[in-house]
Length: 229
Image 1 (tube, rainbow, N blue to C red):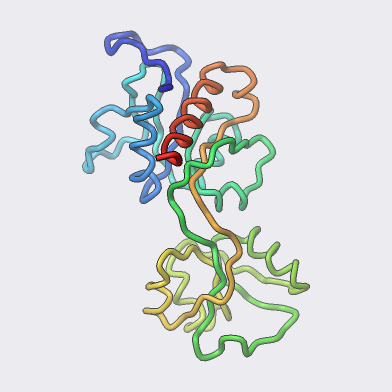
Image 2 (cartoon, rainbow, N blue to C red):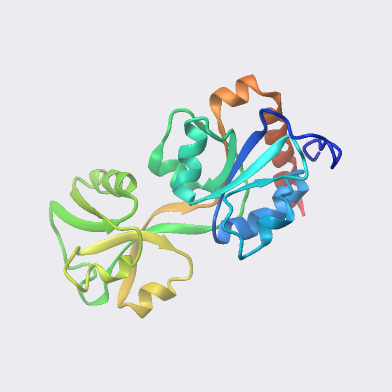
């Protein structure tokens, strides 16, 4: 059942529920699910020329903020937003105690993987490695399970350049088709985490704001109907 909407001309509440969404591919896939759950942003949200980050919603009880994926988790965990959508990679990387991910939306599928140059694949055996990634926590945990100390060089992009320029011997990054790795002379050697987008909520907000619980149920129903179809 969609989240209950107020009439279009209803006044904006003084404490609107803040819904955080990520920029990029996940958002494109999430918009139809959001609409089915009653979360419909105003027209300006779809205007490519708009520099706004906060938008009204057809439901006047709610505002939508559009931020970087990693920031979605931070906004929700600290209570600046009550609800959000983000990949499970971000949920696992931060592991915020105040963050709860009750619904797997079954979109945004990819994987977090280790990759290294094709010509050195499988040739390195060491107790210490330098790895380039924007996922330092997941990377360290992955190598700790193997008894390897990982020195993580944090990069936010262009990860594939790191091995060839001597910055790191391998990378940990998101992989979808593997084409970018291949084009840069790298090969995927292991998968750390299979990823999909999740609905996330602030734990305190879930307990104190009935609108959050209603949204969780709405998205749960939408995800279940999508899976059944």
